[in-house]
Structure formats: C-alpha cells, structure tokens
Length: 427
Image 1 (cartoon, one colour):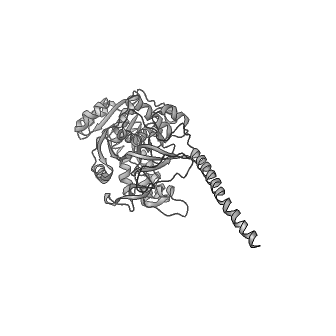
Image 2 (tube, one colour):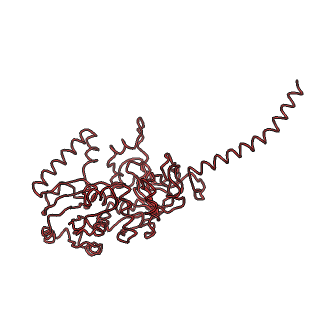
Image 3 (cartoon, one colour):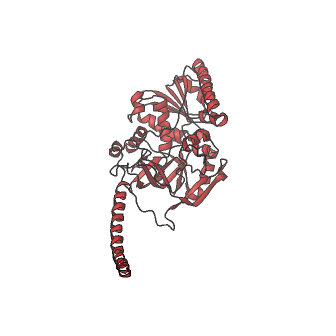
C-alpha cells in the first residue's frame, strides 16, 4: 500500500511540469486570440501603468472644485465598439464651465447612472480631444482604426469620464483618423476618426465640439441644406443669407467658415477689436454690436434665412431684434436649466410653455420661428468638418493655450469671456 502511494506521488510530480507547460501554451494561445479581438498598445512607461492623471470634480460649484489626481484608474473598454485614446491635447468649452456649476445634472445623471445606482461623482469634464489610439474593442475593425493612429474625437455629454485626463474611453462613433474619407466609409458610426494631417494636435482638439455645434444648428435644426444637408455630409445652402451673432467665439468662427465654404452670404456681429479677424474668416459684412448705427444697417439685408445666435442672447431676445428672419436658432436654450430647477415633469412643461410663448412673439413681430440648437456628435457632421479641413476651407482659431497642470487657469479664461477662438490644454 505504501509503495503504491509512493509511486503515485512520483508519477504526480513528473506530470506537474508537463501540465505547467501545457497550461502555459494554452494561456499564450488564449491571450493571442484575445489580442486579435481586443487590440491594445502597451501603456507608457510609468511607475504604475494602470494609473493616470486627471482633473476630477467631486461637487458642483466654482473652479476651485477641480482637483488634480495622479492616481486615477485608466478607463476600461466595456463595450465591443469602444476605443481607448491617450490624449495629447484637449479644450475647454462653455459647456464645461456650465457643467462644473451643475448645468444639466438632472437629465445627464438619468442618462449616466444605471438603475439603482445613484453615484454621481466623481466627474471628469472635457468634450473633445486629439490623441493616440491605444486600444479597441473587438467590434472595431483594425483596418479602419489601427492602433497607434492619431485620432480626434468627442465625448458624449452623458459620459462621466471626459477628456480632461490622460486617457479617455469613447465609442468608435466618437472618433476619427488622418485617412479619413476612406476610413469613415468603413466605420458605420465614426465619433472617433483619424485627425487631419493639416492640423496640429492643438488645432485638431479645437474643431469638433464647436464645429459639430455649429453644423447641427445650421443643418439639423435649421435645415439649411434640406434633408440631405442633415442626413449626409453634403452640406448645402448656397445663396442663402445668414446672420451670425457672436462671430468671434469658438462656435461663431467655425460657423462663418462653414457657411462661406457652402457659398452662403454671411453677416456677423462682434466687438470692435475683433472686426478685422472676423472679416478675414470670410464674412461679407461685419458690424460692431455696440455700435447702434452699424446694427441698424443689418435691417437692410433682412429678412435672414437664419439668424444663428452664438453670443448667448437666447430666444427671448429674438422678438426684440430690429430685423426680420425666417429662423432664429440659439444655442442658449432653457431646456436643461428648466429641468434642473423644476424637475423632469414640471421642467418639461415649462420648456413647452417657453418655446410656445417665445414663438408667438417672434412670429408676430419678426415673422420667423425661434428654435433651439444643440451639439450633436453625428458621424455625417464629423465627415463634413473633416472634408472642409482637408480642403483647407476650415481652420480653428486658438485664443490661448495652457499646460495640463494649469487647467483651472483655462477655466478662468473661459469664465472671463470675450474670446477669440478656442482655449486649448496640452498634455
């Protein structure tokens, strides 16, 4: 009995190395197969490769609520269509400052949180970026978005992990790359795509959020190019007349260039010291909004097919304007603010009341409708902007640039207003 037991033990000891070798080969094979479906580049050489730096928000409030941490976990891909991007440059937009103060929290938290999950914080702000693609889910074709590609993209508003960090994970429809036109035909929903070689990292991080906001306001809300203008990247609107209020800001500067590329007659308002800059963007007529006589001149060109409010005046001011229009599109809608104040039910009713009341005044006094414009991460919008950049018909203006550690200073600059283009943050 003892001899049989001893021989069994010897036999088991001889089998262990063989089993280990077989297990190792199986594991390597499985790992190889996993990498085929879920591609990734090695992380940069750091003390802890699964950690990153990022600016977090633990409470709504002012800029001093932003906290820099170097111990945040790198986001994980949780869906087959997601991509992980190592960020090189990002931007600060007015929506970031608004969200810092709690704007849209009621609706966005409903979209963000799972049922029964009341976790709201921490949040990382930042809606757009340029960077390097380091990992993709198995549903993202490697020939359309290869690892290591330089990409630009946007972060959906409901995402709690934005671009003010070293890494961001976004759906593939939020990203785009440099061989854009061929690649975008392969990706069904490109919110991430190759960054145009015509732009450096800072410029590429300055286009998509403001550009998609302008494009959406003109083509989806305003129907400038008809059904095809909203559903495809064809643009359109030749020989229409559009007045851009606030032509020197991030959205306004891109809106003017978009319109001129489509042979639209463009008039714009801005402050006196920005007139030459806005005129150089291609605007046919530029006036100082502080000059009453110059503003009166705008009446000569009315009615406008679209008045695009990029100055934050809001729909309530439409009826008070001195010129007629067919559509007045503002990006300063009370939609989310009403829901924040009064809840989903009463807030929705208040939105309907505000929109009806505003339109009754505008139709009777100015003959046109007031509409609310919004940022839309539509793939055809990204294709449209990418095409204009490659044709050198669209170039972002950068007001100022900051290092990643100085991101609060970038927010202070945004808070001060009177910008001449975009605010960029380099990593």
